Image (cartoon, rainbow, N blue to C red; front, top):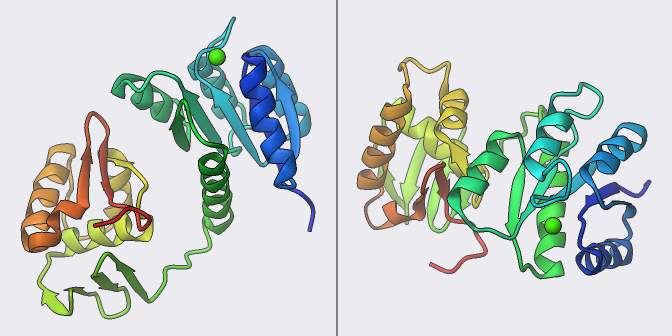
Length: 234
Ligand code: CA
């Protein structure tokens, strides 16, 4: 199996070294860039499997780099994990809106970075394969995707078609944040017209029906919703 190629765009030398050292140790092929301009050039010539992109860069910043990569057919499909020193919601929202696939606030542990890289690579690999598991279980919520039945600790819960579709989508990717638009895209095709605001209403209904487990659907302020990830304790 060939090694996955990862491009790291980061202007701070020590952070760049820390990241690259850990990636090489984890057996990835690493390309380094200290500016957005260099990063874009490397992305176009090397076509990495994933890009790690710092938000604050001299010259063109991370958001611009992200937009440029995502608007170029040559590089658009390369997933991007954004590193952000600021943990302002606005930065996260701009990053995700610019097309980033995930973000990691600084300071971060190399271990977390490696886990997130693996998750993104896995997700990209599985995209379009339509491999929805028959039974999804997260924190005691069970979604039977064949029979369209949802159970909370073995108690069946009656959901509307839209509520079911939203829950199934969130449960397939626990821990991932989805914007209202992404949720609408995921449930489109059902019999119910879904608008931006009605996603909020659906979530509200869903939480209520899930009872004590309703809190597992978390609001990410300014962006959207996620189902609490499996690695967090209840
Ligand atoms: Ca920086």
